[in-house]
Length: 240
Image 1 (cartoon, rainbow, N blue to C red):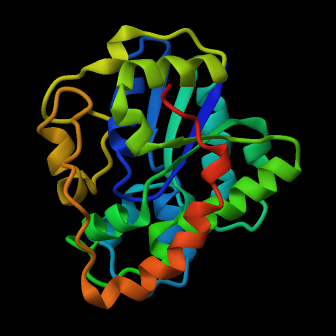
Image 2 (image 1 turned 180 degrees about the vertical axis):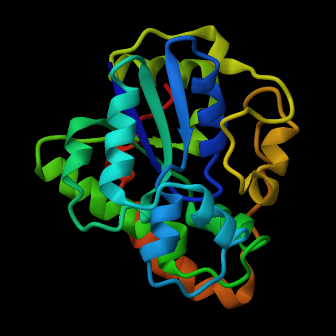
């Protein structure tokens, strides 16, 4: 059985992909299983919504989380939705055993959306630097991840998901294109803070095309993030 490990940043339509894989009868899905571990061990500069509840309700020991995921995969394919920055190890060796997919989004759009919940994020908080580091680590280890882009996906979700499934050696399931409004049982307890938009959807929703409005005080963060985003340019799966 496969572990499909989605390495994302916040506000990247990663939850919609979680919902897509949740519709497949051959998959179990996990919503950010490393979140409690991250909150317990990272040097944080911001307070996350439901911080204490997340830690108290989740496994917070890295090896135990990995063992739980692998045990679940003994009976079913597993889709793990996670944030890049939740992997605190510089070289998380266990990722070599999984099929890794890195999901990116233009930092301007990501930062504009993220700042509506957390007004002063840092480069660590948006995950793009860590995603680039994980790509380098896995690629140099002979385990190159698939890189997908949220804007590319939304050009034609069915076509893109068919291409993605082909690359990770899965059959495509048309059920991945729609879900019931209101969320799924596997949502993390943080869903009330972050998932309002996706809870109103029943499928992949085309994003608004207006330019992202990055708050002026986050302009330096955008400039800091762009080189990491651009480092993926030649690796992105195209929707064509």
